[in-house]
Image 1 (cartoon, helix red, strand yellow):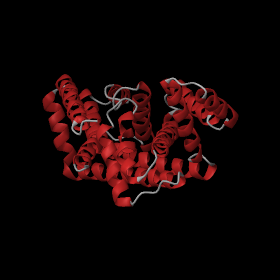
Image 2 (tube, one colour):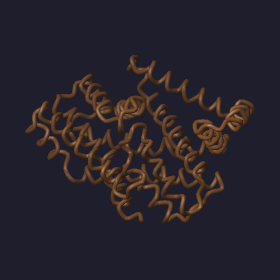
Image 3 (cartoon, helix red, strand yellow):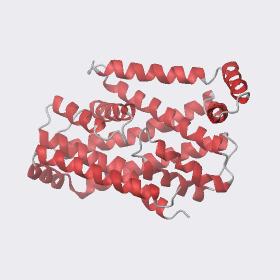
Image 4 (cartoon, helix red, strand yellow):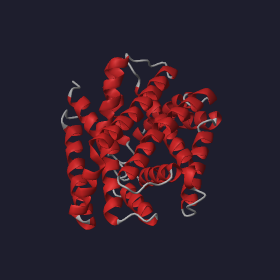
Length: 307
């Protein structure tokens, strides 16, 4: 992989997002958006970044625990730098760019199967945590129930399938008997699935879900705080639901970083709760800058320092 390729991808995603956010601001009224940003003030903005940083650190603790469960421990300083470097490619579809961590961990004797299993365990834990938080508002927003229900059913089915040892062993034997490249890929995939299962014993799943819920609640709490600072407070449960449901739709859309889909859902739900266009757009832009793009910026800094 050319050394500058990930950083170029970051720059392209930043430029595209900047154009999109500029268009949103113009649509909602540029002066109104700027006035709303000034109204929020630096204290709230710094608080939002601190809550986002706590989200990243809690998820790093979970990542570290997954690597320990997979017999692939790494010194925490190295692991922290690698973990945060992955955030540089968060805006890839489904966050798959974060699998860059496997490349960065390879020189530290971490097998690709272990790091990839930890990555998919993270994604599953995050999805479950977001579903738990989205459940806060299902009683008040009926259209969200099918989306949450289907996502929960998909996660449950996937977790049940990876526990089907006989099926995995059968696929592995069948693929081993074939010389094609796709068959070798299938063998590696079976190896990753077997590693992934170790992250979803009952204690490991409880740990992953608990850390995930606390981590994502921190950002949802920040969103609630932001709405109050803009002069349009909502109940905490409602704000948490709006944030979590926007993240869920963004993840399920498989768009890079949920760009476009998460913003549209967030603005739409805020407008549904009576927010003026400028306030809804401002809240969405600040929230995304303090969560998604703060992570991308930190990741780019850490990635630039990697050899």
